[in-house]
Image (cartoon, rainbow over all chains, first blue to last red; front, side, top):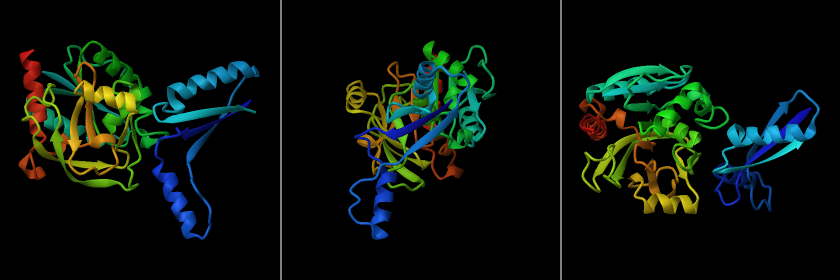
Length: 79
Length: 222
């Protein structure tokens, strides 16, 4: 089973890197990019086939390590 | 007064920290990150600057999960003193010993220069040796020193007089110009500027020395 974790800065937390990317896109001539938010993706290969258990386990991993919930939010996809 | 300096793979201010503590009169032991226990009878743990674990995932995130950090959390829980500088501050926020988080500098650049600071409170062993509101100069050297705390946390920090240092000119976008914060019991301090790099005239300044001498004299008296 594969778990894909998306970690993003929370809404309301300024993302200077995303802002720099937005500026660079404008410099390249891409118009109409109103906002860019940059995050990260973590892929996990998991043993076992219990989907609910995997979701719970990965959520715990996010709370303890993969995301800093002071500034980041996360979303888990089990594939 | 017994102090320990934690050493992670990628720490690079550990020996400077040990020199500063010894100069102020501390008996210093270096502790490797895989050690699950700290020396017995320890008064202070210092978590030094550097790039622990290559800043992988987030600055300080992997170090915060190392065996020794569980011992540091327990030490703080017993009322022990903890000082985290630069990457050490990032580690302490990741362990939850200090509130908030340190994000990428708002200007996106690594900032390496001497910054003017104000001592925002003298009500801690770390800052007691400074005059209230004192203007001091300490080196900063970081890419992720942009202190963030949500409005409630910030209000609590200010209300409880837990901001230890503020930048005179904000170099990194930190909320409320915050350069260092204290824990609720005022015995854990995290700060981005490097006091251990300003303890000898050869460093170009000695404004960091009072932090170490004040801290150690407070502990010796206790």
